[in-house]
Amino acid sequence: MPDVKQQGLVTLNTDPPHEDSSLVLVVLAGDEPGRRFPVGSATLIMGRDPTCDITVNDRRVSRQHARIEPEDDGSFLLVDNGSSNGTLVNGERIERRHIDIGDRIGLGRGVVLLFTRAGRFDDQLLQAQKLQALGQLSGRIAHDFNNILTTILTNVSFLRRQDPMDPEDLKDAIADIELAARSGAELTEGLLSFAHKGEPVQDTVNIANVIQESERLIRRTLGEKVRFSAQVDEDLYVFGHHQLLVNVMLNLALNANDAMPNGGRLTIRAFTEDVQEHRASADWMIPGQYIAIVVEDTGIGMNEVVRRQIFEPFFTTKGEKGTGMGLATVYGIVREHGGNIRVTSREGVGTVFRIDIPAIDS
Image (cartoon, rainbow, N blue to C red; front, side, top):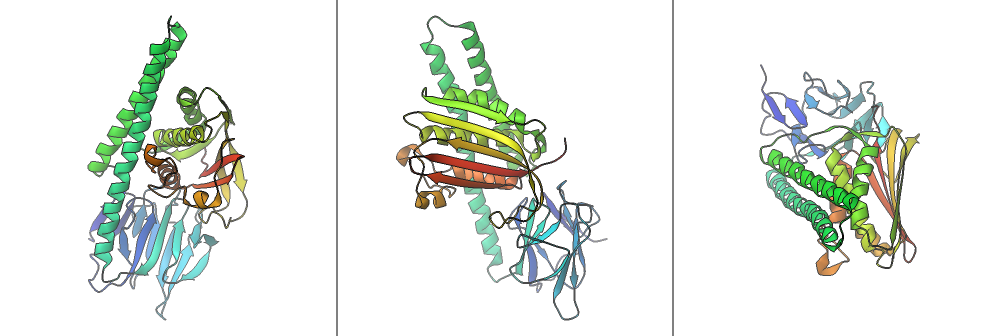
């Protein structure tokens, strides 16, 4: 019986590869980026079924999603097996297509594999990727804890200023502190899960609940001159992690607040969008239903140079006050949910962040 090697989201059922195996599939998006799988003379079946050669534990991937067939001339043919969410090559949905070195293969909306050669320094490269991921995780955890502590300290300061104390204000502030503490507990649980190589908690998430929970915290952290409103449609569901999406909303709201030192307007909208054809601006957005979340402010805006760097780790325009991890964290979470985030901005007018995440049935 062949060995079964399991690494989180993607598993490979095969005998140990020969040392001279040179063609591989490398995970770009999905669990454990950098994970590689040998491609040789046998057909490889990719899908959610445990009998597949490459097994993907992602509900957006079909049971036998696609296959790679070796040809007599040494080339490889990628064939979609009638999957529900499609197979893509370099962002383009395909039925059958020969693949070349450097092609990116998308299984549904959340898993992307790179077809390439295993180079001499491949092991060192993968180790470097793991160290980089660990560094990014540390920054992300620190930044999220900072948001949580900010919420707690803001409410404590608010309560100290109340004289006499309004019972409703007290009730709301305690509720916010409790919610922030629970967020910290979930974040700690996620870190412990990572340390023990556990799988992240993922389930059906109601975006209306995400924004409703975020709204209470956002209103406490906004400046007195900033007006806030939320317009959210019903029945907006995605597959993912509730608390991570709350952190996305908080990060974007805090960023907007900093951009409106003299006051302004912050608006969050969420609705369903039907994408009919592939979008060149978002190479992982294949046709289908998406949940769109739009966060818009009337702040100072940004120039084109800043806009292009806004999602880069450690890039900040806030000097020593900024960590440079807030929007990098947002970008990472959105990508983890199989989504896309775009930003448009005009100096002196404001900024719009738009997130698109694949929709699911409730």
